[in-house]
Image 1: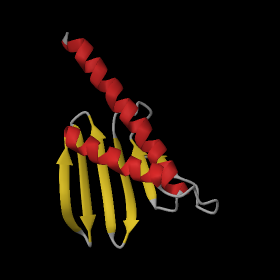
Image 2: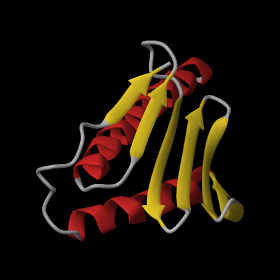
Image 3: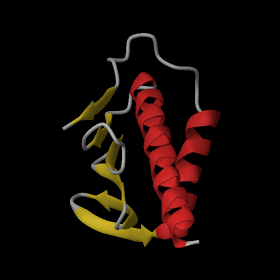
Length: 115
């Protein structure tokens, strides 16, 4: 049972990392500075960041150790969420992106990168 749960968790993290990379691309096309960095090719962790303007920054981290959402403004932490609450907040960001205007054709390419 535990081996199955470990495999499911790894798969969940990989799916989440792929979705973060896609979200970074969409945000970049909408004109928001965004990035999603992963370590290695196994996609078992990622650091996602987006600037929403006016010194408003979102950082979302995912790894085998956990999931965190940190929202900052003027270099001050406004909110820090973990686990399911962090994923719910990420979904709210994705919903806002879906409802926003069509992509800007002059936006730079996405910064989804590996380090």
